[in-house]
Length: 168
Image (cartoon, rainbow, N blue to C red):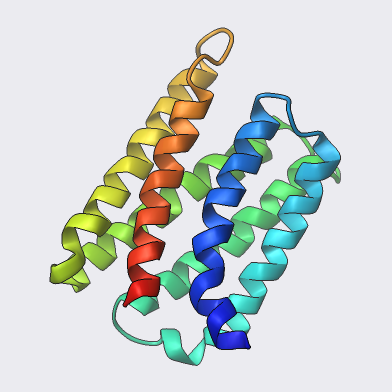
């Protein structure tokens, strides 16, 4: 049971996470829902780390183990951005932009490790970075006009990479 969840869970979880994040940024998802989403995400990350740690000790998977470890810290920073003495937009921004860029680094590394999938992974990394840049630009623009296109680029890039990984 754990193997199919570990293999295919991210194929669903990644786009769902970006839809939820976009809904939160645009005000369609309440703060309580986002706190719960962060806690659930931290739980899933721990699950993937615990059940896959030994399998992620070489090649491209070693980079993804580092992404998950760092991502757990980024996710917990997001939780702290909602509750605790340092709550506020700075930690929320670190979490959000961190999750846009951190997988991009993993995708770029994977493109170098897997030449037959390089186009998918490099394209996914480029889409994630472009989405992050568009989102940061949108934060500086009154009315946040391009939140959904920014999140869409990130979701597309990261989902393409995980779909190819699950397929392999």
